Image (tube, rainbow, N blue to C red):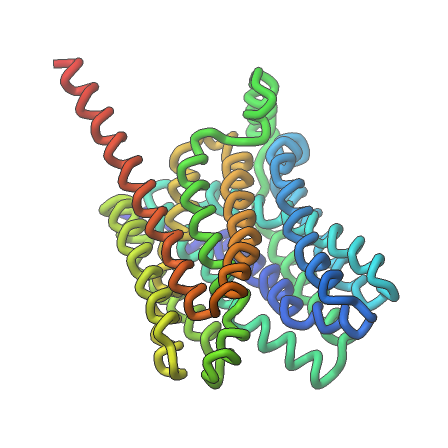
Amino acid sequence: MKESLWTKPFVLLILSNLFLFLSLEMLLPTLPMFAANKGGSDAEIGLIIGLFTFSAVLLRPFVGMASDKFGKKLLLLVGVAICLIGTASYYAAVTITMMLMLRIVHGVGFGISTTLYGTVASDIIPASRRGEGMGFFGTGNAVAISLGPFLGIWLMEEFGFSVLFIVGACILLIAMVCTAFVKGDTKEERAKAQIASATETSFMLRFIEPKALMPSLLGLLVGLSLGGVISFITLFGKETGVQNIGFFFLVLAISEFLIRFISGRIFDSKGRFWVLFPAAISCIVGCIILYMTKSTGTLLLAAVFYGAGFGAIFPGLQAWVIDRVEPQRRGVATATFYNAFDIGIGSGAMLLGLVATWSNYATMYLVSSLFFVIYLVVYFIYEKQLKQAGLAKIVKRS
């Protein structure tokens, strides 16, 4: 019999994660407009967006050690609370400097929260259903991507920025309530983790998990492509004259959500290759279709392929990270993975933005598919070396 997956803590954690990302996605299309209303230049608005990711990336390596000392649940609550304070305080920012400071604070809370959501989820999900469980856990992100921007823009246009920030803070308050009912780690578990951390002689190993580097490298390559796909789709619509560009995000999220009913089970039953390989092919197809897009129908078809590919790859890589490390190293491993992914998104937006400047957005999407080609080459080399190492051990024993 299968171990139970849909427990009360797991459902509450999914909801909490959903509300965190919903609040964040509401601000993605609206915060730049708020900054512009405050007199911010294009460069300053870009800095406001970039500082958020930068502060999250810098903080994540320290989250694992802090959670060993204070507990994952308590630190997760602190992270969500910091996001709440940051979101509620934006309206009080009367200058761009204050917005930049609040953006750093918000990024710190986001870095803490995203690292520990994945870590706590991996503790709750049965090992035999980890691929399936991580897939369903990530549905909150997919739903938030589709609903968040629409909700944020609607609130901004109908009620103004004050209501937007208040609603965002209230959503985060609900996330805190959901998290409060999730069982935290015990003193004995924290003690074991602290002992393991204290006996670690290498300074770097306290911040980076070597066993997570291969999945993280693949996550970096995925992020490089995703950064361009998400950042420039609106400008791509203007360039090509394609209407209803917002539906791209809706179809993308639906495709992400639906594929997780299949990909997680395949990951657990057949192994990671049968998820990570075809999912990358699906993303390549999605990028090529974007390159050829001249109509709304073609745009939505690209969203189907890219959403299915990303929706299978991301939780698959997360599950692979967790499978490779001991329980006490999950916090560091998750931080390693998320940092690589976020660095990929930020770098991809900049690199592919240059490609679009030199050519056009259609060509940029064709170039973005090359990151998945590199992904496949790296992954094949890794699996081949792993297989050869296994055969060598068998020959040596015989």
